[in-house]
Image (cartoon, rainbow, N blue to C red; front, side, top):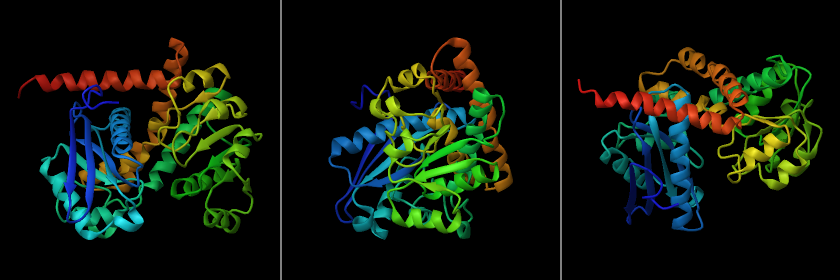
Amino acid sequence: MGVFSSQHEQVVFCHDPHSGLRAIIAVYSTALGPSLGGTRFYPYASEEEALHDVLELSRGMAYKNALAGLDLGGGKAVIWGDPEKDKSESLLRAYGRFVQSLGGRYYTACDVGTYVQDMDIVAKETRFVTGRSESHGGAGDSSVLTAYGVFQGMRAAAEHRWGTPSLAGRRVGIAGLGKVGKHLTRHLLEDGAAVVATDVSERALDWARATYPQVDLVGSNDELVASAIDVYAPCALGGALNDDTVAVLRAKVVAGAANNQLAHPGVEKLLAERGVLYTPDYVVNSGGVIQVADEIEGFNFARAKERAGRIYATTKQILQVAEAEGVPPALAADRLAERRMADVGRLRTILV
């Protein structure tokens, strides 16, 4: 994807040789307000790969924020490097200076490879940062409401598929027992679901054995996908749903926290052809951005949780529209997001 063919408003390349900072900030849309999206710190194989990722992720954030009901546009940033080796105070502060230079067109937050402590450092150079630690007035760990939102989206999918907004008696497969997967496991077990899970980290598997011995653990995602599950919840990296996994998937519902779950365009049609109900990832995993967005106006957990709870109604609406219009839920979600961006963005032409 080229920059000028991507329909992005602005793409900024940020370079500070002294600290080693190599970053790209992409602003897809400010139709609904300042763009908001996390900063991903990742050892990309090439500059082209980093650019492709930030363009895709920032577009996804615009759609996510629109359907979450936020008055925020979509943006994203990537820092090219190994966070275990390259992250430093000077690099993060240099990055903060570049964020500040955009004058509020982009608010940053945590993503893969960055944490609340990093945002506290970035905030020394810019006020356009959220997802900070609680000790600095922030919302803290956004995985709490991310998992809660995924659970609400899953409940809506269960009602659409089986007629009841509960996972009780259903077998749910979770791929990835990271921060979100752990909280999601708790929600599901409390709701009466049976959980089967997998993770590439032995530490995560040890946590599951010690905390929830009733969870069945399998050796790989391939094994999980092919097992007898009712719901598949990808909660690790993107691209989990491809031609091969869809061909053997036994679940009738997909609802997970991972971003960009569809490996390529057309997978949503394959899922529909096999009778699998797919809840668009950027809809059901929006609890985290709802949490950090709430921080901008002064964080209130009860208010943020109430907003994240609306993911249930939004997911239900998308599934109903998809069924009525005879299109995959992913396409129905895109249409609703684009409609809100166009309708509300149009109001900015009315001068006040």
